[in-house]
Length: 359
Image 1 (cartoon, rainbow, N blue to C red):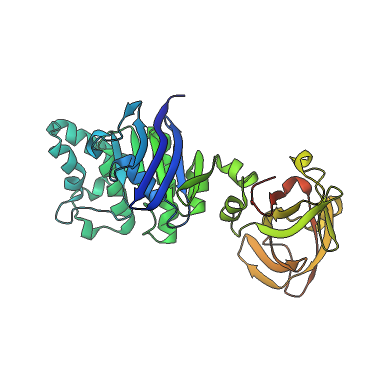
Image 2: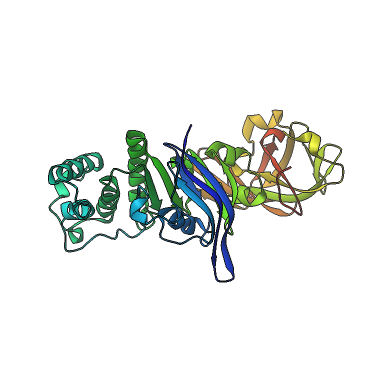
């Protein structure tokens, strides 16, 4: 499949401060790629480099095979949706949608057609004569998306478009963005710090830290096989449990606990006495009847119990280290209760203690 966006050896510095470092990325045609990371990791900066809003220090940018490293934003064939809606308050919705097209001298009939099509896709037809002040936050963001949509471009860039909305609106609009991608099949690059947005929207996720991509893969790959402890900790809610120990006799050992790693995917790479972290997702802890068949069995005492409806979170300790368990909301558990648990080697992750890279 052809690449829609290609980034080669990209550097960006502000004076002596390196923000992006030798970054390489290929985005396939029609792909939905999410740039995910905490504040300050460089994800919005990278998006602005693709858009042409920031001048790169080194490297090259290609869109649809054309070198756009030094091209103006208007010549890159991109549509951008910002965190703030950036609508013109004095114009109607229709005026906001058509403004860029009028400036580009697009024929009037074509402007009408594009605005009508965008309004239909985004279900904002009844709002066309209203001004932004008469719209809700969700409606304003739909108009902002529509303004990018009418440009009829190959690549859409989204910079945290849902972060100003309340929780329910975020879910509703997230579904609309996913539906929009399925309809249009355009390339979309989407920046967020919200892992749920990333997991639900993306074909692939690029997890960033300190201007570098820590891992690039499908949501399933990143969830099941995180390449390092940072990625493992970032993805998942609550995050993965980490316990410090070492490998002895094909077991992860900490104190009196010995968890067999015979079923671990890269068992051959483990060495005797190797200091490691074991990572266990809260939802992978086995409970009830399944404990009998688990590779490792233990009993913990529930400390804090948090009922969340469909799920219940249990906060406890394992080998003297904090440990969380996610279980079915119907499972009977109370604070102070002893709970038999099981762990299977096929669901754990092992990371080198020093480098924190996956073993």
